Image (cartoon, rainbow, N blue to C red):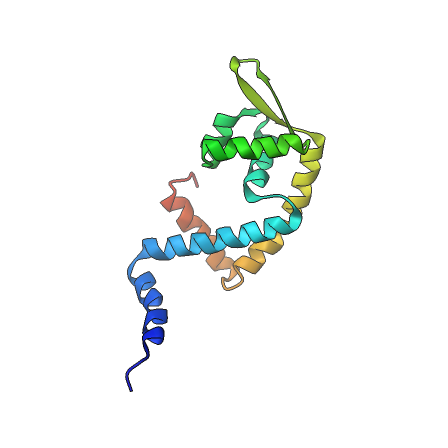
Length: 153
């Protein structure tokens, strides 16, 4: 008996992903991003907001442009993220002393508290998301992604 169309279609992605690394990587990235957003929603802070607070806490006041460029978040999306964080009192925007046309975004005490809470959830998220990988495989994946992204090792 020939396989049903639904069975053939369901198995096609496995074949495609095995043949095309780019397709597999895009699908994996999408799955991780959806899982991250779902987990972030539970903690009350989106992934973009989390990344902005983390960068501000680590590097200090930054322009929205620098945040956008470094975090690879579209500038129009960054405006919305900063607006929401500012309205909630987690960041403040002030004129940049070095460039009076720009604003520096600074994390507040409230933002640091929210970041600390969000950071506590990260290890469990990573364990849940990458549970199929051994610790050695996670390290290998991290090293390979750093290579693909041309990150310093």
